[in-house]
Image (cartoon, rainbow, N blue to C red):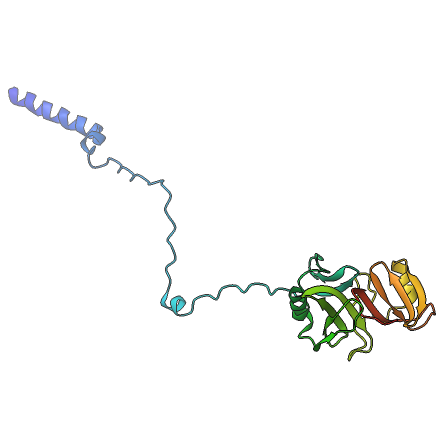
Amino acid sequence: MRAWVNIILIVVAAALSACNPSQSRQGRDRAPTAPAVDASPTAKPTAQPTAESARHPAAPSAAAPATTPMLALSGEGLALIDAASGSTRHLQFDVSADAVVAAVTRIRGAPKERTVNGECGTGPIEFVTWKDGLSVLIQQQTFRGWSMNQRATNPASTLATMSGIGLGSSRSALEAVSVIKVSETTLGTEFSAGGLNGLFASAAADAPITAMWSGVACVFR
């Protein structure tokens, strides 16, 4: 009888085990835990120079070349005009003659000649002259005046005031931008317009300007 009881207990235990398979496979069937993800930012790798780049380094970017200013005549001296920005630097009378000559030379090249006239009414004057007829007048190392003469090597000079008045401009063109005073002198038909002075070829309305000067002058009337 006891043997039958033991057999019945074994059968019941086996049946219970078959009804709950998860308990018997708990260790085997457990899902693996996902690894932790590092959310910290990753630094980007720094590019290392190669042998080729070391032999041929990149050339530095070239600086934009400075533009040469334009030179203009003025009743107060000379003017340097930046073509890109329009800004103007004035070389006024009574400043250092060396600075003025150096500035004009950078724009127009070396002067054609340097002469001295000891018979001018205001005393000896040194003339530094360029081939287009521009002369810078110097007294005691000081910039005292300038002159333009059509009897230069290049009579068709384009050098002019900021209003466009230069050798070859007509009397009517000058009258359109300035109030002028005209008189007949031993020099010819002479005019003055503010700080500018000069000569017309004749008294006609379309007569061209043949000479101009400003500041100290060396003229003989």
